[in-house]
Image 1 (cartoon, one colour):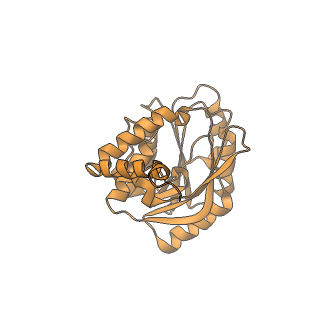
Image 2: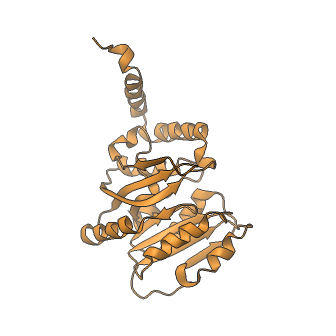
Image 3: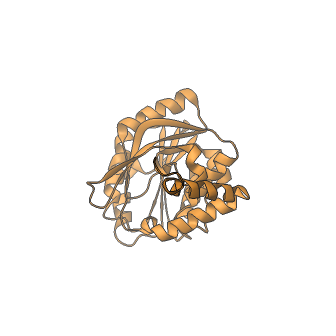
Length: 247
């Protein structure tokens, strides 16, 4: 563990388990932006494929490294938030990467405006890396689906620790936390900067059936009676052409 005398601005937390094929690009992107303002925390779920060897070979790049069994990705993320020393927490998966230019410009916003939550854009690359989708944060749409890209969202550390990720969910816990923040009136400062790239493969997050189930659970749990109003609005949107045919 590295010693730091000045407070960190941002703690980046990466959760890993058997990411030997992808962790190098994540670490390389961290090296490109690592300064004394940036703390890098890695929470590993006892990888057995060489991931830890790659991480340990990075020397002082990693400020905090924990490798132990956990109850899943969201428990590991909560653990990382507890170990974070920065004013803000940012989560980066073990197969994703930081976009240095956008990230450094986002730091300027954090220094100048001190937002509670800063949500930037991210790029999603699909399996073949040829199809790229740019995700833009749209807080008002959280009532309907997860409209906040978590790997490009900086959250004040005390807020992150207070709201925590639900550990009973496998996919939609980040949506649950963002929706709870939105409902309770927390302001999302939105930026068009692209700060991260997410590579979407065939892991658990690609399970669309489970994702849809969890999204509905999150909305039902958080919206109460308003859940039915949201479902009605969704139904109207899906059926608007049938209900209002073109003249």
